Image (cartoon, rainbow, N blue to C red):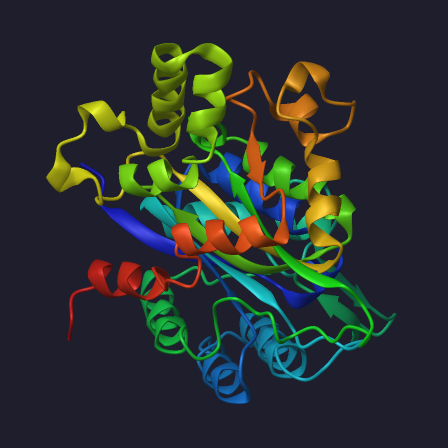
Amino acid sequence: MQIEELSYAIVTPYSMRKSRTGGIVGRLISRTGLDLVGGRMFAPSAELAKRYAEGIVTETNARHRATQELIRDYVLKNFTGNVNGQRPRMLFLIFRGPDAVEKIHRTVGHIVHERTSGETIRDTYGDYITDTSGNVTYFEPGVLAVFDSKAVERDLKLWAEFSDRDGGILDQVINFPAEAKIEKTLVLIKPDNFRFPNLRPGGVIEVFSRSGLYIIGFKVHRMSVAQAEEFYGPVLPVLEQKLGPASGRDNWESIVEFMAGRKPSECPSDKRDTAGTEKSIAIVYQGVDAVRKIRDVLGPTDPAKAPPGSIRKEFGQTIMINAAHASDSAENAKREMAIVQIDENNFKPLIENFYPRQ
């Protein structure tokens, strides 16, 4: 039996500013076949950036060491400071499965390559440009990762240590004009996107990037039955009025089962608050008129009525299996974020529980 490993990939600040997050996430999930088990947004402090950079250069081989030094310098320059009114934001993703470290390695690719083929993430989203003398004039890795299990463990423990202070909902990171109507809204990428490793989760994020909004929060979440009941509570009376009490409740229970893996009527009372079997990704977007912009890109509930290019037309199947949920008002966004505990740090315990305490 193969031993499961954790591995990670960091979507760099530049990749996030250029809305490349969806394409990168899609490739990481589909090409590795690994389970995306954790994710958290970070705006690193100078201390975190310094400590992360200190662990990068380990090679004695001159060529490999030069590459590591390039990455170290990139981290020190790009992980802190301010670019066009933004502190650097990055998305830290954790994957789990057999040979996770090697699979991430193959998918991310090398820094230096003889020719660009588009095969790896760095082929597509990274840049390594030199002059005629071989001096590097521009460098953007697209994604950061390490390819040794001991280094993965070291880095994960470091980022877990800083995950409360430097990570979470980054609603104070981006500077907006004082008169701008700034909103936060919640998106759930629904369980139908995670039936098997595929491009769909990344594709949904990619389409949402058309909104021009900023990702400021990210959480891999498994709804409990109790959370799903509360989240979709307002839908129950609507369904009962439309379909009748019995049929309406049956349909509502199916929604809860779809999101949490179990119908309320079949769930023992002592299991109602237990994390469900179905995985979602909860994302918080921030920006001007965020609620409307996200819902415009999402499309109507029924994929059959959704316009071409919308998420539900591209990825939805039925009224229930329709790819994603988005809050319909700023008030509901607050309510829904509270239900899924968007502020919860489930990143840190994931790492602490995987590695034995020293």
